[in-house]
Length: 141
Length: 399
Ligand SMILES: Cc1ncc(COP(=O)(O)O)c(C=O)c1O
Image: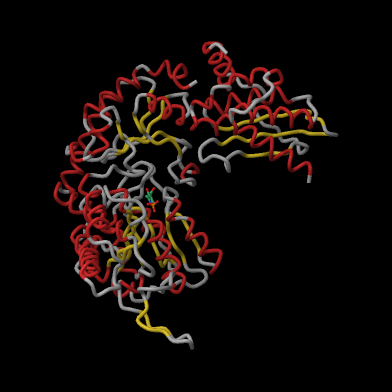
């Protein structure tokens, strides 16, 4: 990806994140990211019904990488089935960890395909997906 | 000052190390002392009758005298080597306070304390139903008035950092010490950020227990000190048991402990660490802690003067006289700023600095923190200013 295009995607999502702002609706499951990182503190709320992700929203304080990745992840996930979410998660993690993956299904998330060059930022890029993993585990219990 | 003594600065002339509150660089003398021990007289401490072993004992005990000089206390019995400030504080809480506080009695701390001076108290509270309460901060700082107001008939302990690792503010320990003495309150002081940077006199300050780490004062990691008043240390129940701390024991379970301070140093100690810390103390006393303190204050004055002229920069502790600066670039998350500075080889810390409950008081959750030490220079500050002045391209660099 062209570095300018990449930067523009991240910056747009950082400065104007999608689905930003929390809801009080009790149907949402809240996952806080503070456990995974000492500094990034995001609440991500998921509404999952009958195996479909109906809505997600988030709020909190975090770096540009985590915030933009959260915004893009949410856009990719809304309307998807849990199975599709797992597929996205698998491919995204593979990309971050420099394994083989299907770039087709990642869309704008491909903007993080060179994060491995900055190992200290891999955690930031993975942060929203850690919360996704947690919520998927929770609903399976 | 003294940059030539630090190999890392010689090898990497671009490095600008501004994270001295986290840990400090090590001078050659410290590393030489450690290799001297391994190359010339490796042996365990307190064990043998051969020359090298005796040499180890001698070197090891000499470090106690150095610590004594550093904190101006009269007795080497009152100096215990630990693995660091965290270890020292845990010993105070679980070896002493656990046996001296009753349910309902109170420990006063603040919301700006490091986790190592909060979590042990929280655990003790769970275990023994003591109370842990917070002295309110005034403009993020501890005032003697607020200490007075917070003390109740139940107050048995006040436990504070001498200098905080968040804003670098110094607490009025001597006045608090006087209050504590008058009212029979134990004063526990976390000296992690003060002992490396200022002259300290534990007696003048009225400190009952003092904890600090070697690695924040030019020494190696994994070693530190617990100072305690002798009559109190005598009552400190060893939290670790093993070799080196017992005089005798039998199969019936009758144990006779050694006298202070060995009783509180079970197991093979961190010998290289203690010796390295000794070399660090020599080094600090040679340069002079007052000289170091003044140097840091001067660097901060210079830095604040220059940084204040950068329009989009927020400085949180301008007026506190010390060697620490907490700041943010407006609208930029602190971690992004730290990553940006790293691009220019400038090391700073982003975060809440392990004082997680401070955010309840301070409206800023995270900051970038710069902390100076003797080897930092005005030229390094100039470079910091140059980089921050052109921070409008920050996302070009970090994304
Ligand atoms: C104020 C304060 N107290 C305690 C500690 C803990 O020190 P250590 O991790 O060396 O035990 C630190 C270090 O970060 C500190 O800054």
